[in-house]
Amino acid sequence: MKNADIMDPGITDTAEAAPEQCKDKAYGKVILYVKDRIKAGDIKVGDKLPTERELSEMLNLSRNSVREALRTLDNMGLISCRQGSGNYLTGDLQGIMEESMSVMFMLKQIDDIDLSQLRRALDKQAIILAINNFSEANRAEIEDMLVRIEECEKTKAAFLDKEIHMLISKQAGNKLIELINDSLSKMMEKFISMARRIVVENEGDVLSMFHRDMLLSILEKDEEKGRRSVDRHYDIIDRYLK
Image (tube, rainbow, N blue to C red; front, side, top):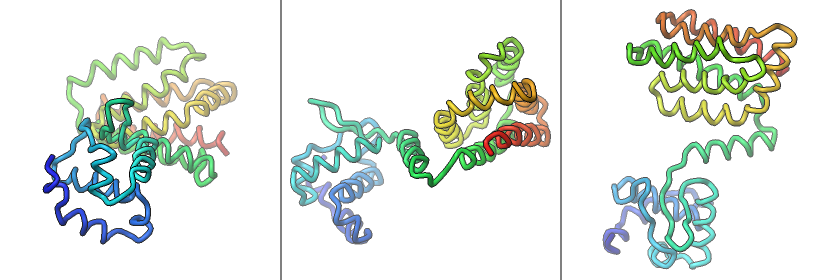
């Protein structure tokens, strides 16, 4: 990567157009630099970033400021700092999302109900997409999961819960839905186990029945059945969340 290419006017213009508070922070300048290089096609996921010294000279920042900026980006999941090797672009959107939601949860900006409502909406859309994208090549995977639901012991059903929802997201063929659903599942892991136990104690294993209906709706290409089974599933969940 040539210095002449790096110091093109586009980077300066972008930085000047950014909000004042962004310009005052070293990581803001580093982020703008990375974004511009990605747009230009000079940096891709897995590529190594310039060294601290190079970034310091390019962006007119002190080495300490650049080091702190890179540490911040590493903590955010945008890059990976490898000791003795350098800094690499990871584009770990899922890590960033999980970290952000965790902080929002701790600050009580969101709660279990918010997460459940988002997951409900995602599952509904995922089922519609899975039905529209369905091909016979997908049948075996769904049928195998239906068999696993039948054979699964009630005490272990919570472990299968995430796999079922992730299978539906995968069948949808939308990477963003799959990524967000996975992040939500990880955040709600403890709750899902507890909620399933309470639901089974009070109403029997109705959640497994709803899971079966979700999967069958894809095989039967029945969008109404899919939406209805998702709603019945989350109506039960939300009742015990409140």
